[in-house]
Amino acid sequence: MFADVDGDAYLDKVSTMREEETWTVRVDLATGGGAAEAFGPDVGAFDPVAAIGAFDIEGDGTGELFVKVGAGAYTSLVQVLDYEDCTITPITLDTIDDFGAGATAIFPVGGSIGNQSGLTCDGTMLWTVYASLFGDGTSYEVIEIPYTLSGSVLTQGFGDGAIVPVDEMTGPLFNCGDLTLP
Ligand SMILES: [Ca+2]
Ligand SMILES: [Ca+2]
Image (cartoon, rainbow, N blue to C red; front, side, top):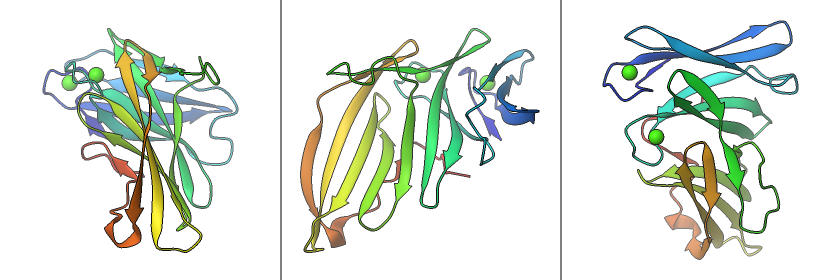
């Protein structure tokens, strides 16, 4: 698929390929050059790894790479990677309570009627969205947690919760520009 990764307004090619047990995500710049990064052997064991595209999370002019690295029956796993100076770097998490700090930035997107997970981008931050249906089925509890990107680290901020009636839910699943899950 094509996306502007380096911010020069020319579309670059983002692709994934498998060599034996290892998946690689690869960027070929429109102007020549590029980069590749291999995922660990535990990634893509059951599902094909697929490039979703690029979106500029923090608005610095260069796109971050979004790659589907796994999927269950209802949920996909989306990994976010940084592209900078011909190098692809997996983005890691810095969390408030240090639980999960340093972990690779991989987020669930999808879910069932009862529980949904998603990602939202507002041009300055990335938000994780979790919605769970109350037992009476009339409304969701929606929790949004912001992450600020600096270099190749996403730093977690304090989350916000809201109660949203079922008929006002618009499906918070994946709202980062034109990106759609493959
Ligand atoms: Ca470009
Ligand atoms: Ca960026």
